[in-house]
Length: 510
Image (cartoon, rainbow, N blue to C red; front, side, top):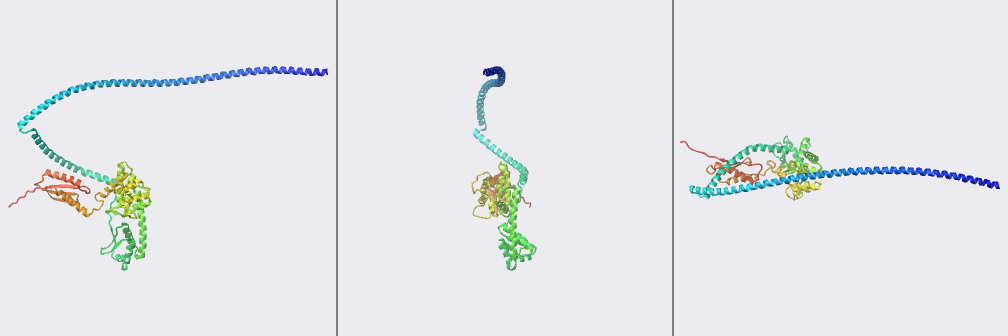
């Protein structure tokens, strides 16, 4: 037991000794770790301090750079201000110097004006004395002398004016031909178009009178079938080698002409064949109308038109207005509108489109009581044309209010195309009335013996009495007549006025 206790006590002492040494080892290791941690902390502290110093130095450098730039800008601004200040000072000094010069000039002018006023008074006094002396010498008052002088100057001025007018007219006549040729050539080059005259009658040539009998048929059945199918009056009379087709609708006349040509060429002429040929010809003409419309729009450079408008444009070829072919008139108006619109800085393509469509109401399939301009406007609106184009079509005869600049251009170009010389046939009565008015206007002047309107009214020859009208009066009469005709009459082109003054000396040898 004792040994057991002694053994246990020895073991406990051993454990205590071991624990002691272990504690000492742990304490030493802990001390070493603490020293290493302190060394690492010191190192980290130094690194952080170093980084902070570097950051601070960098911030300081950037701030100093910004301060230097700002200082430089301030210096530049101060230099500019100083420069402006110097310039202002120089200008102020210059203004002061000029002000002094102006004051000196003003004083000098005042002195000169005083001298001029004094001399003017002396001249007025001297002028009055001379006038009094002249009145005494001439026996006339100043007003009477002035009236005589004015009358003399008036006569001289009138003679010189007539000479000048004659010279100016001669010079203008010489240069007018050159300028007129230039204008005509330029117009032809810029607006070239064809012009045809359509009547209500067409002539169909035939080879011999035997064909007339075949066209008439037994008891006239063939000719009746032709007239019923085409709606055209066919006149077969004694005219040699010709048959006359009469109808106010050019499309129907063309259908009848082509149908008769096919029937005569084929040789089979009877009512059934006539109806078949006329039906085919109508379809052919309708297709041709569409092709003409398409070709016209392509030639004019107009795109995007509704197919119904294209068909109506083709139909214009078979319609005339006052003897002027409607399609050619519309093409001419379209070209004129494009030229005028481009000169005015407007949309030339839109103007050309409105010019081509402006008379579309004349070939409408339905013909209500509306005027053709308003009907054309409604057709354009129906087929989705632009409002400017629709208004220009409806307003070109002032039947509706103009709301765009295209409308007056269409109106003017329509008048140019329709009213120019040679465009349309003139009614005989109005033509004769214009010639009579022209001759009567010349006869109203004193000293006129006879008047002759020649060259279709483009020249007026006036015969005057040599006893009552002098050569100078002849020049004045020609000028006055031209001015009066120009203001009082309406006429195509120009009118040449020729005044003839003839002196005859007659004697007889016996």
